[in-house]
Image (cartoon, rainbow, N blue to C red; front, side):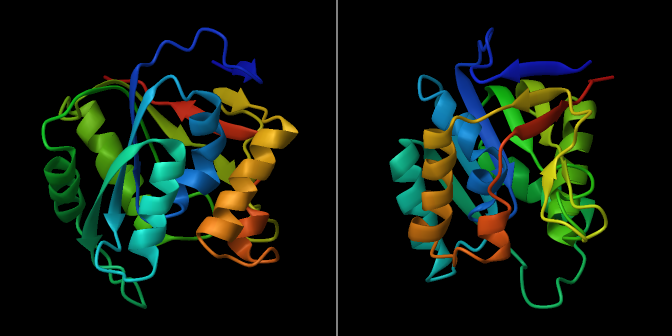
Length: 208
């Protein structure tokens, strides 16, 4: 079902929301506009990697402060070369970081990882989706980011057939871009900055 919720997501009823991502900055690049659009919700960000990173971890905390959100970080292996992680290892980390809290909505990476290709994004998507389908994820609804990059030939952009499309106003888009460039410190011409686009897009996962 395609739900073009436009600029406001009329009918938004989620009070407690959690974003589960692989890295600091993923929460902003892929759904920062949604977080900014709904400050009335309680946002919590679970980041599975980089807790010990002396550069990225404090930047993540600054961004959470800006959102007035809570968050927690893990330290899954994110070393160069990205050795594959088992579904069990990722799921265990998610369980530990969620710490038995429950949410009305959880949002995480899409199965293709938003761009060609990031194995950690794909692994997180696979683990979180499996947990949801096995009724092991403490949430009523699960959404995944819905972006593609045409096999790496373009910057990531919204999938036109995504279930939920959120168009950002210019002020929200500029705030999101500022978080990526000024708070996280990416250059304006970096991949990360170019990935900051409108609309944002999400797919709903059906629980079997």
